[in-house]
Length: 473
Ligand SMILES: Cc1ncc(COP(=O)(O)O)c(C=O)c1O
Figure 1 (tube, rainbow, N blue to C red):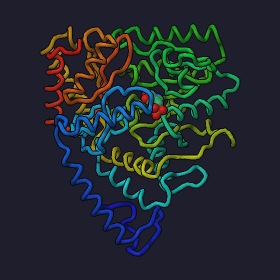
Figure 2: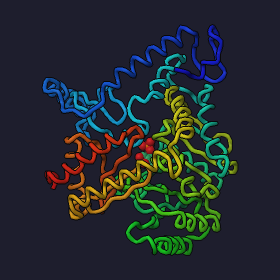
Figure 3: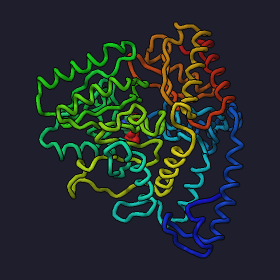
């Protein structure tokens, strides 16, 4: 194994590009541990039913946890901490395909070598967390990797760490508001999801997610691209925007958009749609803020805005999940005055180390572009979905679509309860997915990059079987 320390002379105890103690002995021991851990994790390599003698133990752990947290989990899932590639082992000894990846963060799959490495290297550092006041070179490395990945074509220049995707969006909003004060109105999109903070729950277009909450923001939701009526989408959205402007002229600070709406079940448009609405925003002097919390790393470029060729329009981009670090990328113009932003943590040392590793790995590997692995996965999944639809009928598998590693489909007419039942049956049969959206609800996959063709064949056998069993109606 090589790491950032490998160029250092063997007795050095410091290094310019990575923090922590270092010696040849430590490096040898890390290498040994790395191999031992990876070899053990690699044993989790096929799906498996629960061990009968662990079933009661699992149930008691789950019940105890549920009692403490006050409500049930969506799935009866507690990880054993063992898993490899697309496979995750539960505490009851069962092994399943993980096609949701913690709702998106495990893009590389379980116990990927880079993850093991990031954790082991972090153990050589003198704290667990990286602070904002007292930083480490690792935080700088991750920021530089991010800014370098966008600097060629966009105006994004700075990155600021936050603790979650929702907090990244809060930070973005503060920067935008400071520049545009007192124009505090916001434009967002129907079915948007932006997080669970006080501010982002109002950008999120789901009133039942903020029951009993006071209202602080003026957010106006306009239609996103309509996948079932693509030709009229741009016209409809521009009309809604013009209406808004007529009602509240010169009061908007930003247009906030997920180019691919994750929690809505992967609703997305095309370049012409986005260019049309972004040009409208620019003409009105409104900032373009793209939420890439769920899309980062998962499309046919590192960022969805790059895949759609929208680099010139973006003023603010928020990330989290698969990046392993959370925060906002913004232009020079949006760099705030001192005092507006701070905070204790940047993140854990291991997640920050993982942040730069994953960015470099994704950009150097053959993942992006029309011939990259992500385009290949998208094609394979959509072809297989078509085959399942041909086999089970369109009344059962009504609609499917997908972009990059984000695939979704509708079961029957997209009824929420039926969709939830389907996800639970799929889970029992060995594949973990999640639901998304409402009217219609969809089943959503966030694929790991570690899937092999053999895995994909088995996943679709399970999917077809689940449809045919018809136990979810
Ligand atoms: C598009 C989008 N924005 C923001 C968030 C919030 O991120 P977090 O859960 O890390 O706060 C999410 C989470 O699912 C998301 O999908």
